[in-house]
Image 1 (cartoon, each protein chain N blue to C red):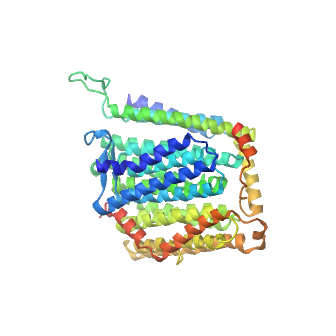
Image 2: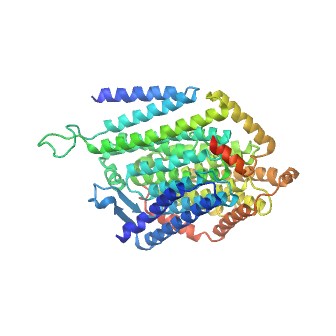
Image 3: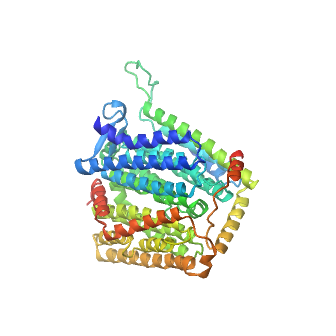
Length: 140
Length: 466
């Protein structure tokens, strides 16, 4: 059982890392999700006891599974779910503003911005948004 | 009951305030000012708690009146309270900066409060898994805050920041679970007691995982790769929050998990810490010297300054931990001042940046001098003469390099004629920056409160192992 679990964690983590190193941002998010799942599985495998479900009334004389790791895994799943949704939203905003999800394009845009920075001797202090700009921003 | 109330009040104020502010339209200036009031109220509650902790000892409680060992425990000791006060202060300055300028986005005021709730909870919890939950809470707020402004550059910074720090969080979770598997407990005090009898290999493994996680958070060399793009891409107030408030998670985490729970492993890792710290100091300084844009100089300098904290941790013992805490506090204030001031123009701003630059370089009369002085003193307590000499030489060389790059950037920004091209910034922001700079000067002339606080905080941790 230990071997199967560790293999599953390893495969999940490995595929997650592979996706994380891709150029496409959606794949990067997929990689993050896979790595988080590997972590959840690892949490489950760190359980101290194994046995029947830890639900009252407990069976007499039989071992019970460790309920604490299950609670931890559940919390981790919820957090991962929220963060993945947030990441996807961020990626969508990047797509809307760059019209690309390729990391090479983003890196090129970053270099351009840095070149402007160097030329201006620092980032510009941005003027406060006007009311129309705010509305437009909120509409997006 | 009184204990429970004073302990939970700051978290509750930030949390409830965040929910309340989230319901109001964040575009209005009123909302940002309201959030500022809640921040001040939370800081007041923290100060009350701090007064109680410092006069009559640590305060603790167990959530939901569960018996000890079952329920989630909270506790306020000088170490946690010092970092909670510092983070809250930095957030107040950053929120005031945005409230004065009148450019908050809809989500900024509420998110800053959720971030404060997460950070306060993290510094006051005594449960390792609860630490992870609060850690995630503050990180999620920070991911959204990095995108604040919504311009392409900030979105890119937010994606980098979120992906890298999510990986850090996963590694941190693995470390905590490994600790649980070895000790069978999640309570920090229990873990610390049982770790002393645990086998060394699993302990080293979980220690390494935790160190990598906090290293990512700190932007320590070689985990710094995300830091420059993020710090230069985001708005100044967010850069100040990231480097002044979120970095504290890394320092506090290393002190709490390393110094309190894994002291044996920390002293075992001391040579590695010293090596990484040295690499960080030199790398940050060399990169900063080679940069032209002032915000990049400050970003690389942040990588370098973290190295000093590592050196202090490697020294260990009451002197080393005290120096680490004092240096972290002063460094957070320096970075807040510099990130906020570097983009402004007009009266007060030049002198404020000069004070920040002096403080980073560790020159009197700025507060940074006492951070470096504490490091020197801690360096003189280590073993043999050669080590001592190497440490002192490193700190001196690092200080000289930072003096060089800070004033290179300062000269380029304020002494060249081009500096006059742009109009002066708003008066409110300039005043705010001047107040922060002035407080650094005051702490430079009267450092006793900070030194006393850091010594009390370091006294929480076990001393150096034989």
